[in-house]
Image (cartoon, rainbow over all chains, first blue to last red; front, top):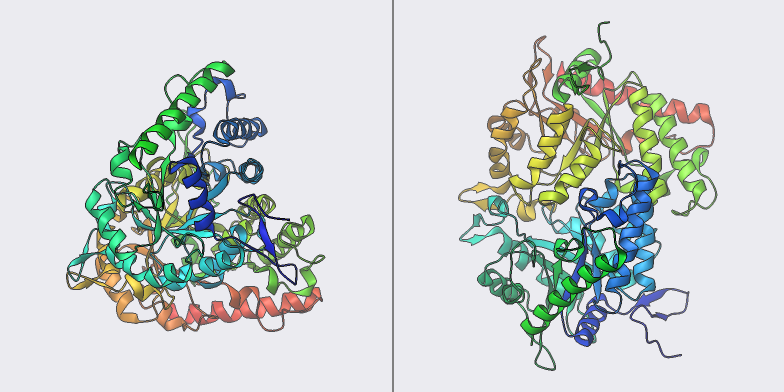
Length: 320
Length: 320
């Protein structure tokens, strides 16, 4: 049978399933949709609309976990068929302890049922066997919480990234490494000059070999990605020069003030002439848009749909 | 009633509990015990002794979570009264999904019941409200999984560390920032020269202000700590110059090949003349020592006790 889902794998002898490369899956899906929007799931408990609040929202309460689940599942229903990928931020699930992780497992499964790719924003980084523990938890063939891609922190060095790359190789997953983040404090170390060039450029250039190894056969984009949060187009251009086929994850679109054009500054023309080469994330702008702070289902749906329409249209315009 | 437990807090009007500073609690405890050993709980599933194995040890199986819990609780019984602090590595609990986090919550509570301090090795790092999510999950006054200290990653800059520092201030907790790690790849970025000095020195010096703010009133040690994993004594000396009252967390003692003398190279003489100013971690050397791969309780206990005695005696000697 011909595989048509973006999740379909290739069954090899020994019952190992090698999936199509993440970079190919996400690029094909964003091409089809015509925009690079990634929907960030950052469910701050204190911003929940009345519609989804349950009890006092104490982090340890089972009702709070139920509220978190209901909110995320309702969001997935708005997002299904409209975006290629969702990015749950694990901190907001960890905030609820084990019940939060249980909800996250359900949310990830529900996203996959809706044919949404899942990029887990975890920014993990550790050495040797510990990094392997994280990689096996989220990316390996026996992962308990299997996602399509994860974010990772490079401070510990390339050997700390290897377990993620290896586990991703087993299942065709992606790994997005922090290169330049969008917060003001990113200047403290990332911008500091190492032999005349900023640290983030050194990080970017050191990833070139891994990027090559993780190249997707169908689109030529790499399943190694880079988090590029700067609002300055020069930074995007410079990192693109160093990493020509790496997918960018660009946070900060919408609520954090960045515009659509700036967000796709590091994108390049794809087969149909449309710009491609990354994902542009919006979290708060989509999760908590104006008008969504309501207890009416239809008003909430309308507010979220409008925010989503606007982001999709702006980003679709920006890559055209 | 006079508080005697290291966990006792001071009840203030408004029922807020401000605990004694982490740095004071841990320093008083290590002085009393006469050694700086921190017991790392890195429960690799594939290294479990037969005594604790249950079924096929599939990560998602409830029996595996039960095995993890039994193993950790048995270790805590060996450690109680002998070490000041334990350091669970959260990756090995995440590896089991929500059940693993449920076990971790129980292990942390059990450690506290045994008067052991808990340093959660999570190496989290993120921006703004996300960092606050992590900080509230583990350090804040409403934490679901409250620990005495946590490890954090500095790549994102000082503003990304602030939420941890703020939450730690609420409860008297500690924050250990990665400065120089022990893996070979730590040279990739941490050792690179920024204006003539390595990145890790820049990170260290930038922490001086926070360290000052987190100074413990009783011992003068700071509840801001630094992870210093290098095997070269010069590195310890240099970081000590930059951060004179910061507690070092020194991984890599024992199994990773570092000796006791090298591990305390950055320590300084305390009130009784004994060296102090940090914690020396051993994980595998204590969790999986020679002779512990058995299914006899008494043999397992003997093997662990012997490894613990040896580490305590070597480190006690090194600080004398």
